[in-house]
Image (cartoon, rainbow, N blue to C red; front, side):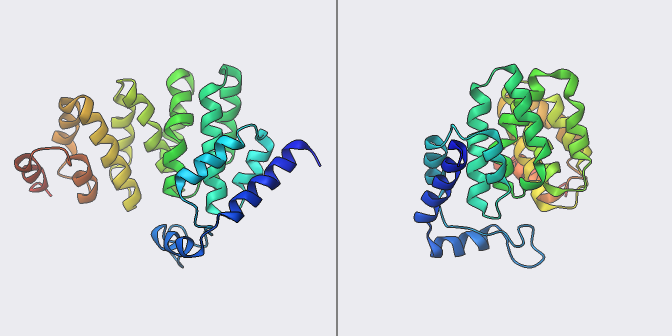
Length: 240
């Protein structure tokens, strides 16, 4: 047995030892795992995120191949812990390793299949890589055009890295592309990112809203204007 295989087994055993069946039941409901819901069939151990971060810190030396095995698990917390490890590694990696992690992430995007998995990883891997590699930014458009809900959410959340850097164009372009998306989780994600733009430059956000508020889904608009004054919120919501 290799060291990495042994570490992976230990990690799973440690997580199993802290499982909480009642919390698992509640999480299964919260993440919509019922028939026909977006998280259908997902399985939970019932471990909170701080607990998973502690495990990720302890096993941060897990090989990329072992992280991939963890990401292929049917257990939600295994996948989230894998992504926390991956995100931490990306932040400390050199340019060559960052590209390797970025490609690994895209190759395994099919396993990044719930909103928390996307949100914890997309800005800090996909977003940060594309921020530093202008020539690869076409990936955002490809993801945004995907039929897969989670790839579209990856595209939206990845633009958070650009927002942090004071670059709002990618967020506004992806928001426009997905303005008529049918899924509530995309509406919420875009509204959230527009709100983050507004925190840094309200004029930039309102410039977008001036053109699009009347046709935006109500949830998207409501999330986008959450920080506005009550009077301004009422004006915008009156357009819908």
